[in-house]
Image 1: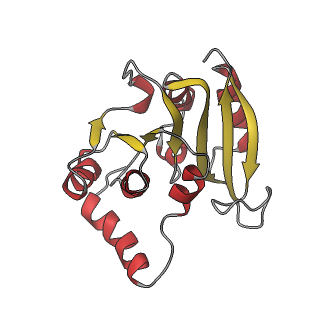
Image 2: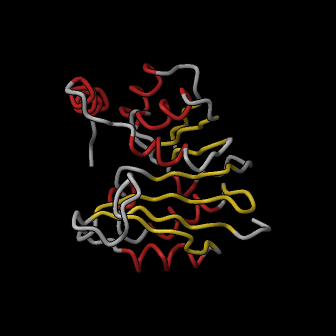
Length: 184
């Protein structure tokens, strides 16, 4: 899939200009009170920039250079890394690794276990992977749970929206939290 970062970001800017909340993901993650977040599949940095504005250390990673160019232009003070998340090894851990915005759905079929493993590799002991994605598009909750369990992440909570509504909801969306064990 080919993206154009500036065009993608304009969609969210237009929503915000109409008064719509475009920071549900950031609010959800901030409520977990992390000190650090790896924004995996960060796109234009919309979520990561808002988390940083709230005082959280953020590193964003995305494989798409156009999306990252927009992120770097919007927040040059943050760290933005161009990489496939599945191959990423920053040799450090975070309190939260976030995959917002359907990241698993934009990952080629067959590589999703590596995507989840790349996220898990960056979680400290007790850290959490937070993943949000639409259902009914070829990657479902049992798939995600299986990939998480395969790298030692246990299910911790599940919601139907970034606002914390109970799962399953009527909207066909899931927000899953999986926790790393006490030894990482």
